[in-house]
Image 1 (cartoon, rainbow, N blue to C red):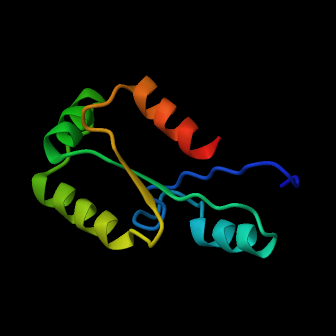
Image 2: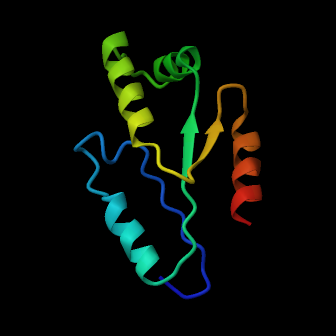
Image 3: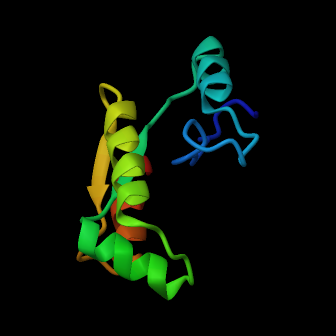
Length: 103
């Protein structure tokens, strides 16, 4: 980490699934220790859009599994987190929203 640089860490499902070795909590503590600006973003989409996107990616997820993950994500929301609903946005629109937040 260099001083004066912004650091963006995305780890949407890291605390939920064990396949990702990235521990967001460690990076959060480290950023706070060195007084880095920390911006938490949460990207969400409605159920219909999530299922459509998963099918497009070739992922078949049972409704009960999807609901369990959605519930977990809602429980993990933190105070001060910025939520961006991507349901009706293009990738470019999402990128532009993120740029407005972090720049």
